[in-house]
Length: 216
Image 1 (cartoon, rainbow, N blue to C red):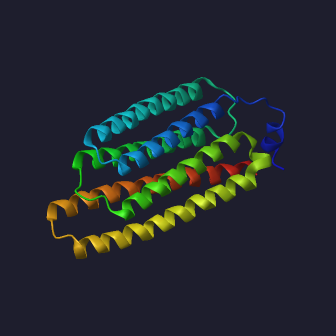
Image 2: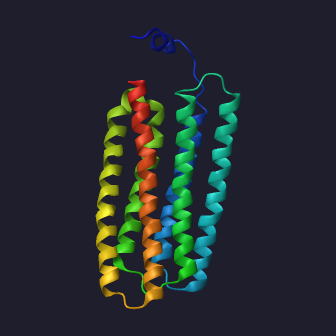
């Protein structure tokens, strides 16, 4: 065992970051469920109301992320690498940014038809948000829950890969069947934003897996 790893067992580390990561994840899960409602809703006024809730959540998450950065600057002993704490907070916040962007495109473009493949990806985003919340709730207990967290990270990767397939098939369908150029652009931009959101969720899980390896 390396000497620095040995001494880590005897140092009291600051635990305040874990509740903040959980708070980020809770906001993201709520926003993902709002996104699902938005894509299922046909009333324009209600769509805008839901979008404003997601936008408000994005602002809340930005504040939590800022708190993490501030606490990082004033904390001497962190539970894991400072760079990883900063990166995890940033990438988690970015996941919500892309959920917000997906909602913004859906409500602003107002496509005539919301294709089933889009709602399938939205459902996947909800699954990803649930997995990330579960991971954040277990993050403090990596020595005991490392295997569980790793399995959840693998599940995130599998979901992201399945979304890639849905995305590629939908793009092919769109260019073969959509004759209205404006509607084609609308649907293409919306599905791209949704697919990008799942990529950002995988970015979060990749950082978590790196943290687990470093703490092993």
